[in-house]
Image (cartoon, rainbow, N blue to C red; front, side, top):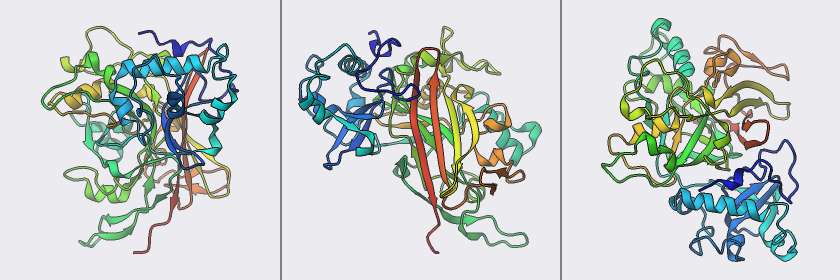
Length: 429
């Protein structure tokens, strides 16, 4: 089925700023609360939120086989479970409805009043009920940096890393939408020198992790696997993802089973899911891999499974100007989403609608493209100077961390908006 929604020449009758992340070619999906406390599934064009529940009830999707309540829910899970054919039909239809040449809704003020809201008049919600969340560790530069910091720089990558997409099962209950404050976590930390008793208290080494995450649809039954050739069929779209980390808590707990409390206290996502279809114009060649992947991780024909998505992280002290501390790109990922999903299911693990797969920290080849404070300050040895004159080794209380991401070519820009969270002090112990 042709993706007509991606036509770069298409223009909307809604006003859209040239630098907007949300032109008519994007059409992301999310969930929002209106001023009347009505929760609905919607999309966004420019600075306008569009109520898809109202659009459906008023007959604008009459030629698409949808259930009456598909958009009258508080998550996108059921819509995602309908599969790629439905997603494409709906995106194409929305693009037609809001095309500058289509007056059916444009010239109906009564309908427009029920369907279209300004973004400042809605409150974004978590777009999916995340049943399961897996976090990968798929950036070669990041894994090399961390291995150099904590192990021998000459053997920074463990023997398995170049052969297998490393991942762990994360905590879905603490995934939160952009704008939700993050409470500094407390926990055990390494004993002080000369002591055998662990310290306990608020994390002193609170960090961000610049990641992206993809959302899946129902993919396989228990015991079945998804081939790498068909992996894209089961990826609905992507969000920005800040996987907050308490480095001192994590350093004490992670041996032998890996991350736990140092990661599970909060993970922030951007509220709009940008579909894989909308990102199709920004596919690029995969990074060259050191070893030829095993057959289940290698497509038969050369494919472009990487995406050229510019990523940025900024820190804003309370009441002060923000400072951009990192500029990276999703195309730096060593293991692609298709490889991650194929690996995730090769043992027969079932994947469901609304499951989320984090990329792992995305670091690039230069120091200013490292995706965490751990790397940017090299474990605190090289503090970052902010625009207000203060310095940061890690994240302070009342700092707001802001992540942005967009893809752009000569014809169109498609973005994700912001993914932000303000750090609040730990509760008294």
